[in-house]
Image 1 (tube, rainbow, N blue to C red):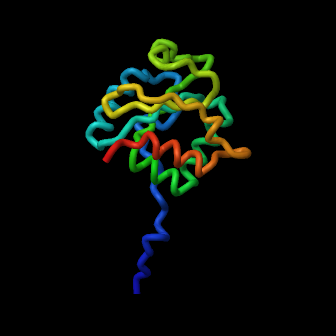
Image 2 (image 1 turned 135 degrees about the vertical axis):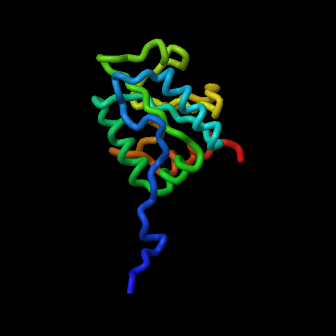
Length: 148
């Protein structure tokens, strides 16, 4: 007899990324053009995550959005995440100059599916202890999710 794996036993897929790493060599303007095509095709908004490999809270955010099933699902349902590197090697100043000033990392920008800027979000208000607050994160995602 084959053992059937119950749906609840299946791993929950993580969030959808157009760019999943902070890469000093990537061109975020080109990445955004491709992300816009994907977001429009999928009816999702774009969540730009600015940070770098040097950023401990960026790593904490990555772990959190993959380990918290409710947050991973809300992200997957409504957003495509595009990481943009910010580091001494590449500050991506030309690209980031189109958005509000960043004062801490990671930093989030919500764009509509056509690339229109909607909202800038510090991650501090989403934090809880050494990680993130499910309630605060879900409220943020619900507020900025695409209209159905």
